[in-house]
Amino acid sequence: MSNPLRRLVMIAAGSCAVGALGACTGVTAATQPTAALSVRELNIVDEHGQARLRIGAPLPDPKGLKRAVKAVGIQFMDPDGHEIGGLAMIDSLGFTGLCFDSKEGYEAMCMSLLNGEPNITFRHDWKERIILGVEKGVASIVLHDAQGTPHLRLEVDKDGKTRVEGVTPAPASR
Image 1: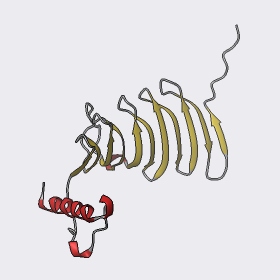
Image 2: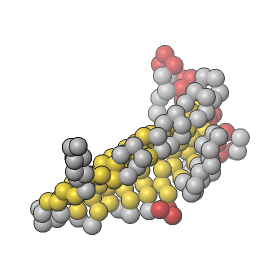
Image 3: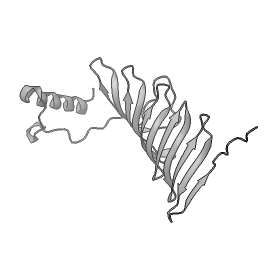
Image 4: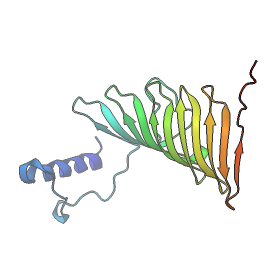
């Protein structure tokens, strides 16, 4: 453990030890906290020593998977160490978001800003199913089939004009 990190842990432990009934008290000026702590990764572990929350720049790959692009942020993990979500920034994609993952490892639900514009995406079986967002002033909802193919798009532009497109007609009766 680095000296600044060791000092921070000692200050926190000392502060907790003197708190009433074990509760942590605030760090006082007398304890002289470290002005800054710089680390590439910080792991918060559970009572079994398993990392459950990780802050990283960059974040490591999820257990058993390879990250397609570099991400920085906060990673949430299950009791076995598998990533189940996170708060991430992906500079190369203009993405900042909060996502929750499926057990298979894909992002099942994300609430994000894509290049500064709001977007919420729901996926199932690695395929996009519902996308809500605003792009260039146009609010939209897009519904996809189980293969990820878009079928219905509802839009309202910045001037209030609405549009419904891609409605698949009912099959002709035989």
